[in-house]
Image 1 (cartoon, rainbow, N blue to C red):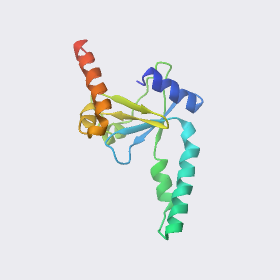
Image 2: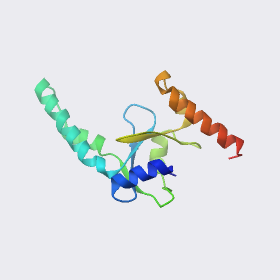
Image 3: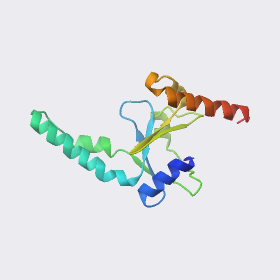
Length: 141
């Protein structure tokens, strides 16, 4: 279920209730965002292609498009409930727990155990996640 702040941001940026989810390219988590990010992804491909041409490097626009647009569009209800496809659960290492982190252009969805493996620059997110887990355990969930 999308937490309220994330739900509002995605709803506002999708002109409705559509969550885009995909595997993060380097971290062992998922990335979520709204449909408004599509034009930004097209512009990113244009920039990357232009840079490759200037540097005399090969650039496979189709492969890069497939990577950046490899997200799944998922509807969610007014409560933020959505069904995560099994392949995304596997790619993100999502099991029992799910922690949402971030804001801006995208946010991340973490298995708490995977987040705990991140470096010191993730200290704030790890502390928040641990606090949420402790609260949930105290409530018997």
